[in-house]
Length: 134
Image (cartoon, rainbow, N blue to C red):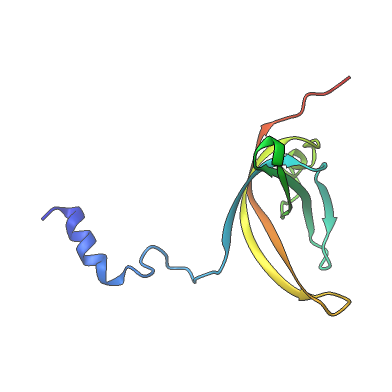
């Protein structure tokens, strides 16, 4: 029996979480490709921590029946070149964003139950910058 076959058969009884020693987290991953709705902005949270917030517009469907979905994204990036790069991206830049998606439920001021999808950026890549029109 080969080394790999012995490893697979030895690990078979404990396949449930054999790949990770960390605790289980209920987090969904999301990948977005779309255009920035505006230049990302730095805002302060209620705890005083700074967060970069921006929105991504993603289109789906055929040209004659196109649907646009808007996603609000938050990135906790410390001051420095990475934050400067993100906040310098212009409106209309096409970006590829990977992040964690968390659904939160709450009650609004009128007592109605609401839910919101929160996306926390892990990585971002710029696919295309808009051409300046002069």
